[in-house]
Amino acid sequence: MKAYIIDRYGKKNTGRMGEFPEPTMHDDDVLVQIHAASVNLLDAKIRNGEFRLILPYRLPLVLGNDVAGVVVRVGASVKRFKPGDEVYARPQQARIGTFAERIAVPEDALALKPHHLSMEEAASLPLVSLTAWQTLVEAAGLKKGQKVLIHAGSGGVGTPCDSTG
Ligand SMILES: NC(=O)c1ccc[n+]([C@@H]2O[C@H](COP(=O)([O-])OP(=O)(O)OC[C@H]3O[C@@H](n4cnc5c(N)ncnc54)[C@H](OP(=O)(O)O)[C@@H]3O)[C@@H](O)[C@H]2O)c1
Image 1 (cartoon, protein in one colour):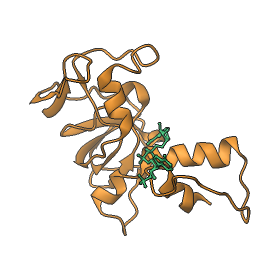
Image 2 (spheres, protein in one colour):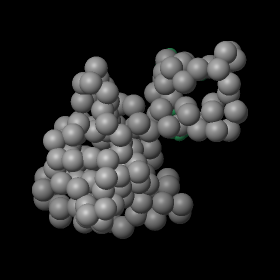
Image 3 (cartoon, protein in one colour):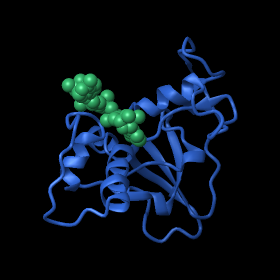
Image 4 (spheres, helix red, strand yellow):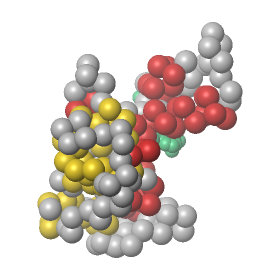
């Protein structure tokens, strides 16, 4: 499949378009035909090598941490999705790679795309929304009705923080 590939870490490495092996499917995986992906600061940091000690990816690597697309095929144990479903996700940290034609995502990491969102809108949400959720709900224990002052509210994480509250 076609993908946007980095062969080595570094700020000056701009990557390349090329052919990459099809994703490996596990029984609980859903194969997604990618319609949209977001570019997150995390992609640049991974490319620069800033995360190489905690996220030791094997190179060559396909970047991309958010996806919206259509289910092509499901693994043997998948219950909640079927071919043709419109979905969005943040893929597993160890199996990123949404700057490509297809990606395999575990069922647990996937959700049906809300009908009122375009593919592009849906692909802009998972990673920043999960970050907002982890911060406000899981870490801070935010309860309905509480107010939060969000600095830098117009940014990637700040925008879904507003919706979470
Ligand atoms: N993006 C993610 O998925 C993610 C995940 C985990 C952690 N984080 C962390 O969360 C933080 C925000 O990330 P982000 O993706 O939301 O970044 P972003 O989209 O670039 O947003 C940054 C925000 O900060 C504001 N800002 C920048 N400099 C400022 C200053 N000096 N005073 C006041 N506001 C300032 C910007 O305002 P303007 O729009 O007016 O410039 C913008 O609203 C970063 O520390 C990032 O490492 C991000």
